Image (tube, rainbow, N blue to C red; front, side, top):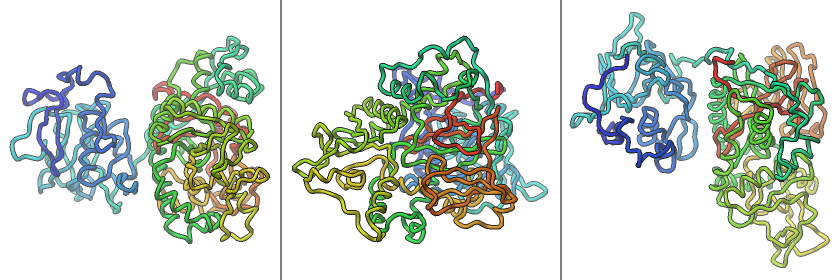
Length: 630
């Protein structure tokens, strides 16, 4: 039974007092909120210095705002307050540094301390959500803390804490805080510290919730109908590439009706993992660009190193979108790599799988990619593009619909766009600018080409890796602009920025493991093949490979399980712990999540009959369903 308020509640938004550091505490008595001042959900968003703090004036919002104002860091977005106990890091917003976060169970040998977060379990007074407060004082027999969304009355003059609870010592010497409300329980405290002594390793909830499964839509001949809009350039290009109105290329009639189901718990964990891993990859990128010995591992011509470092300094926050590839099963969530440079599958995830569900009558759960299109529009609105955005693609049919999908997002953000296929129509004007076939100077580019493609062109022309790239500039119709003339030209702003070459390169994976050893989302990856790998199995990957090419999988007895051919056989290799994709109804399944502006924006599913996902692997529909329906 919920506790009764001790005093009449103050109106929603009333200042109740201040926590240490002068951080305001507000009334969150929602029944008294002024509907004219708060007409919709967006009006309840709390932001500070442009950063999202949370939902006014809940406990999570206060905790994040207090940490930001006192320490300059915040924890990642969480669905419920108790989810904070499962986070691994906080982000220092001044420089995007990741700082370690550790959780300590109530009753453990490490006491709470001022500035740490006190976390309540789901249940009783805190049914569904749990609760979080900031510890302000730790006395011999009690703990005092500040919070929002419990009492809605003003603090006594001069007091900077909301409540206090009894602190006792267990027979084993542990520290125990007794919860005050009936049927409520304190899970523990979360401390930003590098010292993990006595810390709890957060365990995933019921492992079975991480197992995907499949269903078949009711078969009523829907596959025979046209269900994509061929009047839309992106969808028309998709139909042409797929040779029909379908999401997958399978010829099996039944498989056209199959979709996959992901639990809400697994989706929330993927959201957390995506947000955290993006920052981890950025953290590792900075480490690489500050250490030439590490940068030498990436097989990037030395002449381009200053450009990479400048790109990082000037454009670190200007990445539009990328894709992380995951294995998701009852063994946990593991990331394989980050396609931060030229990711694909946005169209399939952000539009087609949702239209498939509507046409085939699948109403259970939610579209896993429903947020992507809107997130991309917001990203382009913030991108600072002036003038025309030239969307450059190769002549590949997949790149055509991907380019058109991105064009729609940018145009929805108010940016005029032009799509250029290949390089044949480019030329120079009298000002030595590269112009499109209509004579428009190219000043801003979003590309489907990988940066590595331009580097290959440079390598082909320069035997000496210290040789500077010779960019054409003279007006000479016999010397048409090359790809590297466009992408490496300082006056042309390219998305994704040049520095994304680093997190996209597989050489980042061993460095990540060195910086974050045994991190639950990472797989052990090394530059050298060790005896440990031979005992557990491993995967050999080219550092700059793409599309699943030139990958070899070996079991613990060094037997070859699977290998793919390709054009990256001469690349240096990294060795990653073998972690097989789960087999579900005959498919090996890989979950892909998309970052937009560094945050989770949605997901999709790629499948194959083999152990390796390649560019020819199918995308099948993915729905997020409630846990109890999985």
